[in-house]
Image (cartoon, rainbow, N blue to C red; front, side):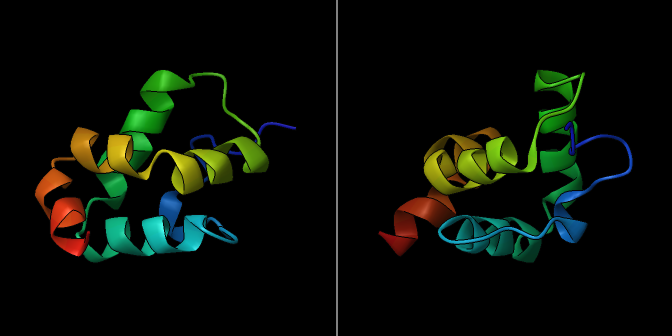
Length: 77
């Protein structure tokens, strides 16, 4: 089942576990639309909820860097 498509956004995705912190950080930085575009470009056919959650959970540094949030991620560490 493909989940993330033109009808799904980061804001309405129900992340779980470690992905929640990354999702919140992106939304608080007002980068949700940028993240949506990034994922749509990388996965034009969509991806599953688990794939999206894993990206948010395990690729936080790459996401922040891709969205221009690298400095914020470094400040938290």
